[in-house]
Image (cartoon, rainbow, N blue to C red; front, side, top):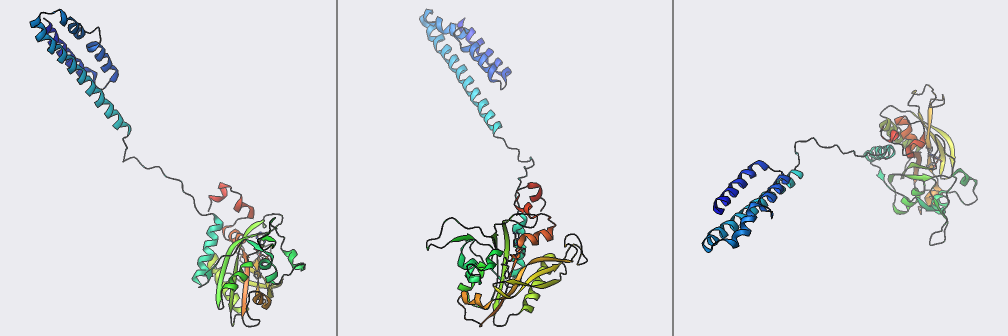
Length: 344
Ligand code: FA5
């Protein structure tokens, strides 16, 4: 009798397995039905002790084997389903379109600086660097601007609280001209070099003035360098930079470190010299200062007096970028406003 019931349990279990699919809940129901204390199989197992010795011999192993079988079938199935679920979780659709990463780009100022460097490199200029924290010697004295000289008032200065190890006062350089001396201390003429970098001035900001801004200094020194050389290099640079024919104009000016000194203008790019609001109807835009290097500056750098000639200039990079990319307020550059940054 028990033997027949065991056969039936086996068949029932196999048939039930076909219906559960991959449903773990249904498998649990099966486990309760076939293996719990109240299951028919358990009743048979419990009744073995009351059977005759012959029946015990036959039914005992059969019932135990049936229980082990059901147990292992259920365990294997649950494991298989679980593994499949894990695989599904890690599945990657290699045909799905990728997510586009947002990448940054160069700020307009860096872009302009690189454009400037590229043009000068193509004209065989070296690109050099100079310190932004400076002592009075390099920023003023060596450039022929001694203490108490009224020309120092041309550059409103940010002074540092701490002095350097030699006890010298420190400042944030007010122009890139300090690099003229550093460069000449380490190099002998002939050379032509450009030094781009930041400069700082303790002054109120407006649409054309920032307290921190960028300049680039150019210095060309040799045995026979003239203002004519300067004019032709400047003309070539500005035409390449604006990709247009640009006229230049020099007006007499004063800088202690150049003699003679000039204010440097270029023809207005917007109206091509006819006169408009950008150039205040003059047809010209002021770009920076320039001049022939004062012999005193050569002496400060350790050169022999009257041995060399050279010219130097210092132009604002923001002003150039404003003109080329039609930016009407210098404060946009460091505003961090993405609506501005993303336009370029
Ligand atoms: C100078 O700084 C001189 N060192 C330039 C020079 C170098 C003359 C070599 C001769 C020989 P100036 O203060 O004019 O000169 O500044 C030069 C240019 O820097 C200006 O024409 C302008 O383009 C830019 N600049 C000056 N001050 C500011 C400012 N506050 N904000 C933005 N740009 C400025």
